[in-house]
Image (cartoon, rainbow, N blue to C red; front, top):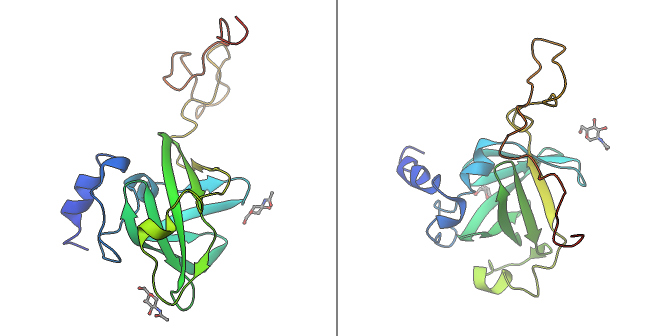
Length: 176
Ligand SMILES: *[C@@H]1O[C@H](CO)[C@@H](O)[C@H](O)[C@H]1NC(C)=O
Ligand SMILES: *[C@@H]1O[C@H](CO)[C@@H](O)[C@H](O)[C@H]1NC(C)=O
């Protein structure tokens, strides 16, 4: 754990800039964004927890740990199952500060671990995109419209110029 710290520090500078991880080593780590936040997926009604840099747990299946097995940039081979013989490739897309999109393969049970280049292929990465949104308290940030009044001491009124405010919907390319 102590030995990993300098590496984690470096990897925190960018999700997609990490050096390729070597196969099945302790250096296969999930992005800091996943490690530092809880992420929720509405379709699955599930939350992903990262108890350490190379393990994920889904809140609905806490006994079924998911281990980072091999990583190359945004592609990660996960390992799971009672016999540690079930694998899946996921691609994590860093869409914004508060969310990630994941596409993934089916689960494959194999006696010999797959190579990343064999399982992370376009014909296997065919799931629909899944959106996982940070549950961190900073996600909502301000929670009262800038044109409304605060009604309690814990309300946080927006200024109207937050960086994550959608545009006003006028003068779009498609509806001129
Ligand atoms: C989602 O899961 C939570 C806790 O696991 C449960 O209380 C809630 O009813 C679930 N919601 C839906 C829509 O299934
Ligand atoms: C599966 O892997 C975990 C973590 O590497 C290990 O603790 C466990 O003993 C393994 N289980 C089997 C059945 O090999």
